[in-house]
Image 1: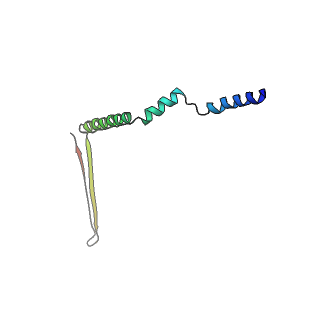
Image 2 (image 1 turned 30 degrees about the vertical axis):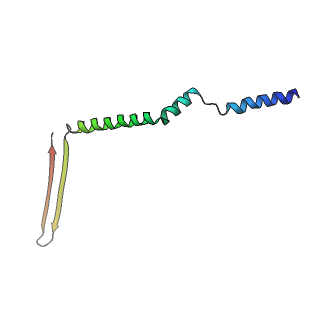
Image 3 (image 1 turned 135 degrees about the horizontal axis):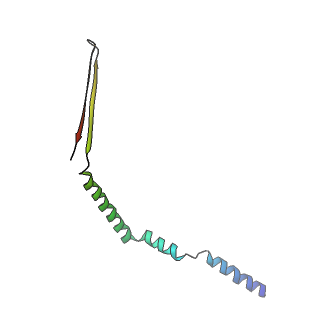
Length: 88
């Protein structure tokens, strides 16, 4: 009888331990699932993108265009191209 009670007690301790969550896991889950924190994180990301867009105005830009045509009537070949560098 003592062995049965002891084995039930030990098995109960091991079964309950399987559902335990550490403090780190609980805080991590709360941090990931908190809607207010997620909204503020998105606001920070949007503000950082706005900063990057503002910085891009001070960077040089490069624009390339070109065309090529071939006319076989009198063996005339025409090529043209354009490179434009804008410094702002």
